[in-house]
Image (cartoon, rainbow over all chains, first blue to last red; front, top):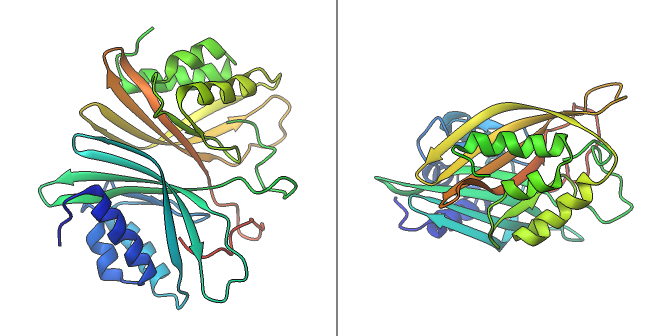
Length: 140
Length: 140
């Protein structure tokens, strides 16, 4: 299955997470040793094989999650599209919402339509007063 | 001053931090309301004016820092260049090195050469056994 727009890939990516669908996740990513995935507090994964191996481990866990995406910034040019989003995650039985997570998703257009090239998460600052490792580290 | 390559911008960006040079920092960024800067545990800044205001506050602190950059991944195409790097920061009097920080730097080529369009940091996972807020949050 190929994707006609970057947004189609993005929808499929988050659907694959919500539905814990390993095959759908595999179809989202560009077939390249350049793809890169950095999830919160997880080791950096580079190259399709390692990225999919990491996702396979995540998606075969029994835990289910729902994700709501807020768009923050789009930069699209030629064969690259950069979407900066805020991910709001929730799971069944969760008493209060998790803090949102920032993500940058970069899509590339090739012969097979648009595919995901890079996904990087960053935490959103915690409310004042909550200690955070590294908060006292030197900038930036 | 204009930059002939994305790497020239990157060098100038980190030099501006090390030298706490507000003017040099201002020269690095693309003049656009699309520029985006996410520093560790700091609020997201969008648009040149807000990005530079945040850097001005950081760079006028008395604290000095040295930064060593390890390249992890380069993706360059047309008028966009994506550099994924590991930042190793150290300050005077620091007894042990800070944990490295991942950063994605995205550069754009325009009429004025290459400029910085986006800078996003992500923490590297702490060693096992160190608690981290959000580590128990649902994926991704």
